[in-house]
Image (cartoon, rainbow, N blue to C red; front, side, top):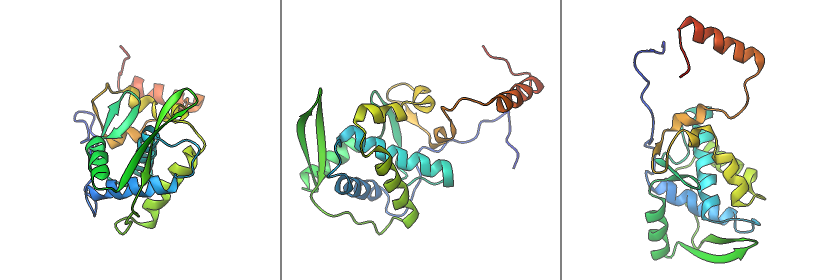
Length: 194
């Protein structure tokens, strides 16, 4: 299928997966349980782990883990329904959120009070979550923010929805050969920077 230069491709903000919204709830429980002993783990880091799981999964296999809609927030991407979900989970005694002072910041650490049901998650889905947990395990929220505040996040303003296709963007510098090819294509199509 050829990409049309006249019509932009349809962007994906949400993907309906088995389990629907409960996938986010169960992923939150799973991550909270796995991160209970992490040296740093607060609500911001929880959002980063979810974002990294979903967007890296989409980049590699064209399917996210939770399928939920993300938005750009000041401290990084987060699922749109995260705050109401966490509130609901607290009311239902599924999680608790404990505040404590860590160095120079306040950490709001979520803790799972019930076990996650991962029946709707494939082994591959779990692997993406586990990889995100491993990547961010020792990092405080500020260091994790450096990862999530890349070109995709910078292309939006606070409150904007973040399509999964942002996962295709890279913060890596182009090598000289790739840059030369891009310039050649731009010249052939008479693209100009503004």
